[in-house]
Image (cartoon, rainbow, N blue to C red):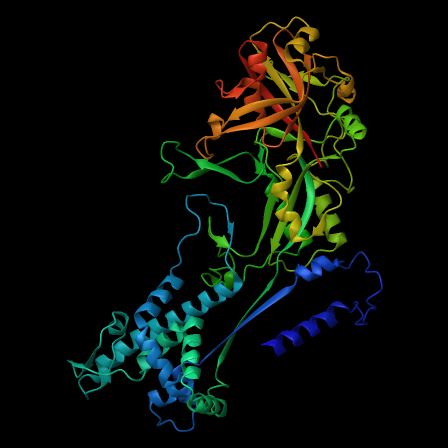
Length: 592
């Protein structure tokens, strides 16, 4: 095994160091933009390397018998060349447990519950290869059972033939049928009918236990003799080889923006009938998702496609094409991870100029939401040009660093929607690209170590996030000064002068939030302390106003505005002293 591994790696290394003309490149030379530059950390993690797994299995008894010179040898004599008698005895003793293991392997439990039709990433190519081999033996065993039954029906009237019925083996019966009469027999060897069963039941743990027993007996003569006999026989040349090759996962990192309120982060499905969550069909919410808008171009353009040959059900259809049913578990996949998530009706934007000036004064960097795509079993490792092509495809732009122009009309940053409610218009350069779905990614995308993925969630828990929202209240607002006085905040647009605010400014402000009612069905009930780091406000009219705020990670902004039936204190509603609600929310960046 070590020799094969070393030879494969040396061959791949030599290929990777050759240019298109077959000339070996000097290791110290720079790799051009068509090559893939991997840091020492990525090489140590084997990101994007090829994995190879081989299974060597004994041939079927029919193949062995047809290839041996002495065809008069009994089935058991041929079987003993591959499966020693002591190992057969161990299998016989543990056949009840082995049969259960084999059955569980062929009928694995469903990993994911529910009716979600999206594909799930999971499994292992080595286990999936074993599953396919087991299934193949099970099919052969079924065909043999049928043919053997037909043959016995034909021979029953001509002679008495000893046979073991397959159903008796599966039911752990010790009866054999001799001319239609049941007799007790001693099963010291394996008959033809049980060959495929024994092969498919072989477990690594069972063989290890057998080897340990053979070595512990103190007399290795029998084991050495079996190895010598096996090596000299034709059985070795008849062994079948099964291989699985896959590309190890690697991570692509970037940031994204979202300028629409009908696009979810991942495909979002809900039951068509809210009263019955188990039997009803699932319906989709939103026109698309960020995951689909990013992962599809990355898989096809960046990685040349994703292999489906290592999935569990690859043999269920011809050559594995189209074999992945809705909700199936697959190995090959581009898996999307983000640093937190926003609701579907919340836009994810870049910070406006006033927040950018504040960031420059406080020496912090504000970006869009970071994400990592974990790619499993890609056809190839993407190079710089591939990733640039992905950025252009996602952003629907000819330029890799293009940003959407402002949607302000005549310098106004608000307009009325069809309900007469104020709606915020985008500031200049607040989202990437020109994708009509509203999803854009930053430039450049890059291959990163796995630590970047593992640190996504921990980074989310420590970051400061910036939001802007439009709110309504039944309290009459006479002026900006009145609104600012009640909230104790700054005037919207003057965030860069946050340190020069007058004494009534009371932020950072600690708030206490119980788990919101809207997520209580999936989150544990608890009271959490969060901080509103900064707040600015601006009056729109007598009952409408805008807010811009920065919060600690994990703050529920919607609940901070309307109070969530008194479960968040203090809140904007409690400070204004009247009913307050939020009609529009935008996330305007995250501090790194």
